[in-house]
Length: 105
Image 1 (cartoon, rainbow, N blue to C red):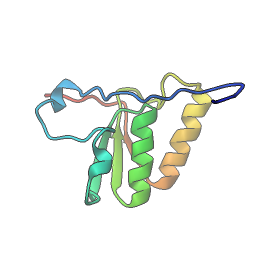
Image 2: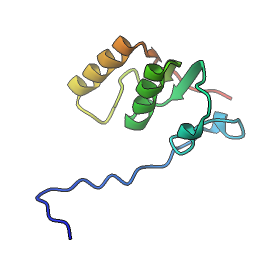
Image 3: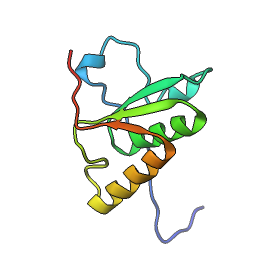
């Protein structure tokens, strides 16, 4: 039996693979952690919570990470101040950004 005042149910999400990457070998949050070797460089497509979490983790583990996003603002659904704070922290960790940008076929 569980007892609590407030509960967060975080069941996860599935990756949306953009059309230019369909048919090309890629990693998602579902299979990334199965890697046996750390890639020297990594491009993360998307600047939502999951993409940024992956970017920070891989950068801290030793990959050189660049985040590509369609919007210049990270975490577009969050408050602007939070977005700026996250960007500052990631840049301090060494994560690079190419935003706004878009993928083409």
